[in-house]
Length: 75
Image (cartoon, rainbow, N blue to C red):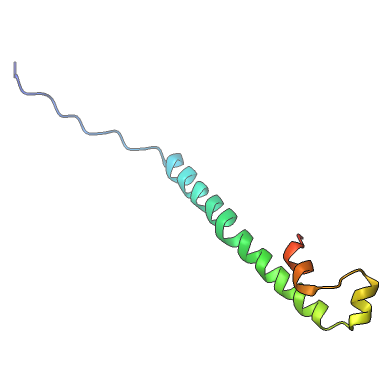
């Protein structure tokens, strides 16, 4: 009989834990980086398209200021 504590190795983590962590990281990356970047690119494309129109065409569809319209636009 020994008085020293018995050291037991830790059980390995199941493989699904690693996948769920990776999934969480990918969700955060999508919501914090990719979604805002996508919105920025869509707004830039819209701004370019509206800038190519004649000011009378913009007035006909109710846009008086391209920048303020694009800033409030959501896809």
